[in-house]
Length: 507
Ligand SMILES: NC(=O)C1=CN([C@@H]2O[C@H](COP(=O)(O)OP(=O)(O)OC[C@H]3O[C@@H](n4cnc5c(N)ncnc54)[C@H](OP(=O)(O)O)[C@@H]3O)[C@@H](O)[C@H]2O)[C@@H](O)CC1
Ligand SMILES: Nc1ncnc2c1ncn2[C@@H]1O[C@H](COP(=O)(O)OP(=O)(O)O)[C@@H](O)[C@H]1O
Image (cartoon, rainbow, N blue to C red; front, side, top):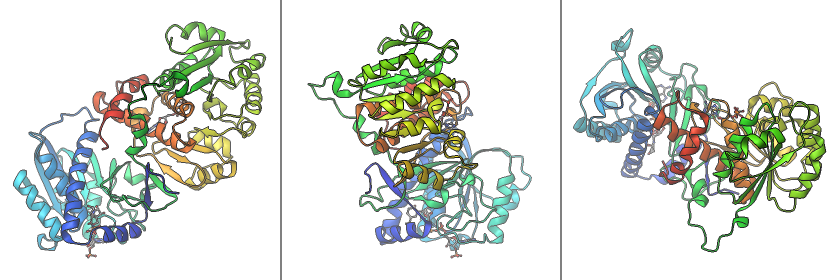
């Protein structure tokens, strides 16, 4: 069943057919390209804003092919040219003669020429150049690419791939040379903006860099597909005004069992994120020494001390406490900062055998024996690559493995990474938010707390909740990076951007 919070991911040939059905005339295509141009311009500006280089007076190198992919690149620049002082100079390399440009691409060039100062270059001008380009936009080839790359374009791509002084490399729709069949000499992008449809060849494509999805309204009528991309509508259930008669228990009660004397921080981060998820009540069970450190700093949660092992972990002896909360809590989070002491692992298996409500298993709880013990619950697992390899006993992680694992066990799997996947065995959802500001300790703990809070609140199926948490966490990270850069930030700075992420526009 198609889900309103996601759009299908299609092969280039299926995308082409779909676009031909939607866009019957040149004018329809022009209108679609104008929409792409505006969103692409904004996307490029926001992505470049994650760098700490000057954000005005930019010099941009545009690689323009004769098709609509080139037209999109030109229209993005035309949109950016409207922002006072943003562009200083646009250098354009055309991959064909001017006369060969498709009519809409020629029209896009005309529009840009009215708005910006343009210099035409040849590929040979770029060889060995010492010039600095703030941004390079690759609009050479889009979804109509058929391999092999012709010599003139190959030469241009190889030259640009070797120019070292380009600060940001952007691909429009697909890196040129990537398609249903790809050429290994493809453009190497830092970020790719999929225009209108997220194309299948982008999955697992290293040349694409970060992948962003520009929704321009192509899927008012949905179509089924196993692979899907999450859209901003996933956050809509968090955007409304709550009922006047709202009561805290209606918003769920999350129980958290986590932490150890050596790793109180992971628990603290998970609790902080859970408290900002919208959940009504949070009860935390943690080793005694941890509770005494954290209870005052996170007063919104209810803190319960759990008997501690000599090493400072959660002891088996406390098991009865889970039984005491089971009637009240609506979901459970286990894992962050727990450590892998044998007694704590044995405790987790006991908890799993008893627990029969929704649960999120993260970090140290991601072990095969623990997962097996929890199979009576509606489960979300949140492994990164290493944890997934341990769970599934595989040496490499593929989307097929992720789908197979989730299907076999009937659970929701969140495979974290630079491009996070959420999978329930039926469909695989790709998250299009997030960036490398998240590659620092504790980002996963924040995600686990946020997700468990949303799960306790019960705003949809486990898969929907997992998509919501991953998208929200990633979007907050994007806003954080735009505001503070990716370097001198702290993991918990992300929490300040959860509110703007809900309020921001759909992107
Ligand atoms: N369509 C729409 O309305 C909308 C489209 N959108 C955007 O347009 C893009 C698709 O645009 P498109 O259909 O113009 O195709 P595109 O990929 O730019 O160029 C194809 C040209 O490349 C050439 N070529 C092929 N293989 C080659 C090779 N190996 N080596 C060298 N050249 C090769 C081939 O030339 P030929 O074989 O005819 O010489 C062909 O003419 C799409 O990805 C998205 O960005 C969005 O804006 C939404 C609205
Ligand atoms: N380069 C990146 N781009 C986007 N997201 C990233 C990147 N690196 C890490 N992340 C995200 O950050 C989180 C890291 O989680 P995890 O590895 O469990 O961290 P920790 O154990 O330190 O909390 C995940 O949500 C992951 O998807």
